[in-house]
Image 1 (tube, rainbow, N blue to C red):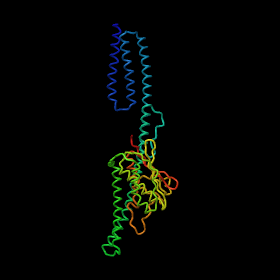
Image 2: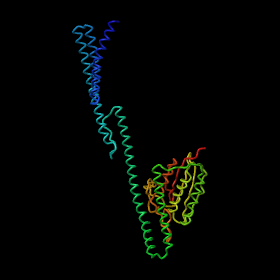
Image 3: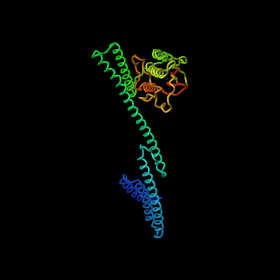
Image 4: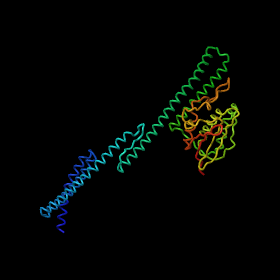
Length: 382
């Protein structure tokens, strides 16, 4: 028993000395190459085994031949171990360098290019995360570019829409000031109509800015979609009568929803106004509401002739106006322009913003003779 304790002591002293040197070496090499650190760990392990074994062999008073055999075995094992550690370190470094080169492609126009050489499990997982990050960056860049394009388009439309009424207001004001207006009351009436049109554009811009800033405050209450549709139809009826368009709302289920009734009425009003202006005279604009699982779908169908398929994904973007088939017709000859006539393409963007603020979604699809705008809202619980 005493011999075993003595052997254990000599082995511990030899291995402990090697371990202490290894700890110092690892601390000094912590900022160097990973391959060098791995080789150092392997060298410390070999040195600890060799030192402990050599110390025990000396204490056992082995013959020179037996001691030579032990040392030879230790040297061969050390060479194989260190060679294996060096090879492993080179593989790790090569994989790391390949992944570093691939990481430079994250966020590039061509997308992430993964390393061609096989990687270890951890490096492969890191590569997968880099690929996912690159995909998210590409998606974010695409959204940013689309948003920038939409904003540029909006600014161009707003500039155009402001220039025309302002020029008309200036001309009519100068005519009144110079006393050359033959019918001053008509001029005043037209000026008031233009001011109302500009006011409507400013109101839409303010509403859209609140939506995009997340500052839209909702006053939610339980209400039937039947009441919402009835109120929206009542507000759109005068415009439909002037346009010669018939409104239909007979397929509206009295489903309860928990929404801000004022904002959803505005949504339906925007959809109805767009539908009426896009539908030819003697056409029909139909409103319906139905229950689908845990959702309520409100639909406004017009007779615009349809929207080109490439334009469907952009319908609810800020500044989108669509093709000539959906361009609002001019006001009655000699009459004042209606509020919002020739707007800056904000109505549908406001529709989407308000609906999404209610945890819903807005969509559009072509139907026979026109298109169908739908807003999907969560049904009221209970």
